[in-house]
Image 1: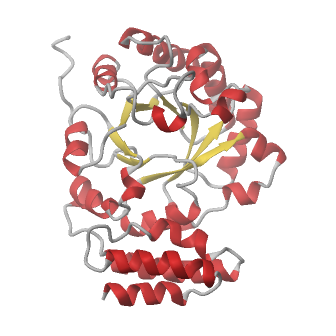
Image 2 (image 1 turned 90 degrees about the horizontal axis):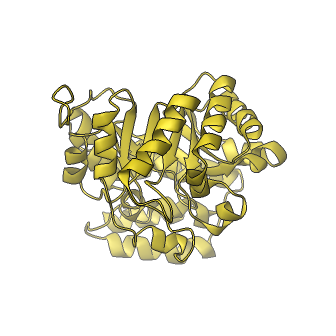
Length: 333
């Protein structure tokens, strides 16, 4: 290691990527993100992956509509055609997203069949072309979320070569690194979240060797302490499953990683979400969709089990009734 590059680095609390909530299919929809913003003033929020085809040939409003309170919010795109990605990025920027992120890490059958997501780690030159086209189309940051490798790619040197090509040829300067490789053949998407070992040293070494890049560490960060430790070596941390398995954790993270104030009151966040839910019900959204983000809000707190049971049982029976949430609040009290 060069003496000129410090082994650890504490970035500014003002770093835009200091704390991020990962893009997660079937989770980080606009309802979840609205709740997340009530809990965290600082988190950078990401959409579910949206394919280029969905934007170029589908219902753009359904995929891109979001509440102004969500800022800063990033749109994650899935695709592998530079022209299509450029046009989709332009649409996203026009809708007001603060960042456009390219998915180079999802291992699902859907993305494999479409030859994008984690498959792109085998084609860094194409990723560079995609990033360059997207950057030329928009003024907001274009970032890359990747794995540390796929299938035969085992070493840090292989990962570093991919990053160098995408950064130096494509102009990418922000890399969100999921610190597990992905097995495209032989493991399911669920297994790919747990079976390949975590290798966070790939991200931390990348930051030491390429201090010109913004590096965000993702994978296995489930406690505030692990996030604080990560921030000693990279520019930011990204939380995935922990952010929906115990969504209230976002309030604790906000207080610990930023201003040191008391965490946002979870009940106050829920009451704000209740008003949002009532407005969404009036627009035709079903209550069962709206309660999904709030089910784990009081994990480990008194009354949490009765609260969850009431929401889960009553929402399907009363799909347009916001008072179900009021009744669940009463159970907490």
